[in-house]
Image 1: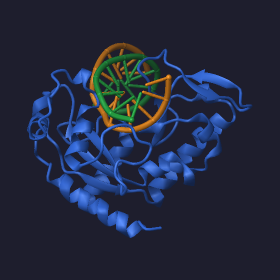
Image 2: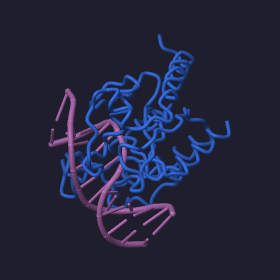
Image 3: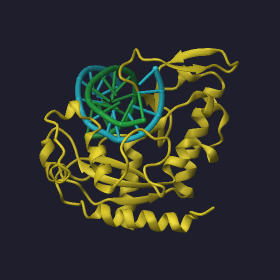
Image 4: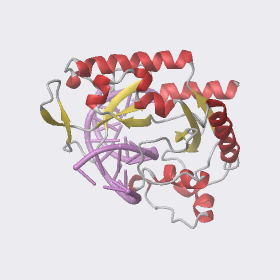
Length: 224
DNA sequence: CCGTGATCATTC
DNA sequence: GAATGATCACGG
């Protein structure tokens, strides 16, 4: 094992320092620096901010199974004027078979959330896209108190899926982690299979962190 | 087609 | 105001 945890933690710390360099800058400034267009309609550019911050910090664009950086996952955090997270945070898609068979310790959720670099960005209708400012980034590492909450949610959700109760799951299940639709529209279906291996097509779903949870993470970071 | 980047729009 | 279910863009 070449990259031990101490090495990764240090790498993530260096990334955090670079992310701090973005604090106070506007999306317009950042887009200009990278010679990127800034979409006029935020509604048509829902993932634009995430991609912009990725580029600013040197992450590679595109869909990946692994975390954004070897050392951590990068997440922008939409915040209101008071700096409070105002939306849930996407974690990863739900793969039914994996959810039935993978213990928490080996789960994609845990891998993605082992270490996360959160970059707060102003969001919401009261601030125009170009004028939205980047906040002070913070690094969060999953530790026992929070991990216990996440594990419990994961186990609860996994158990329902394992018992074939997928349709009983909605966004109200889970204290910190929830499952919600994740698709172009409600008619989309992806391939899956049931408990007996019989193929079926289901609405794509994903894990999200509740805003109440990321608010708590942010509070913790401010106290530290 | 599917996963990653998320926010939108309506309901609660 | 917060939460849920729906939706938009893009890379591979």
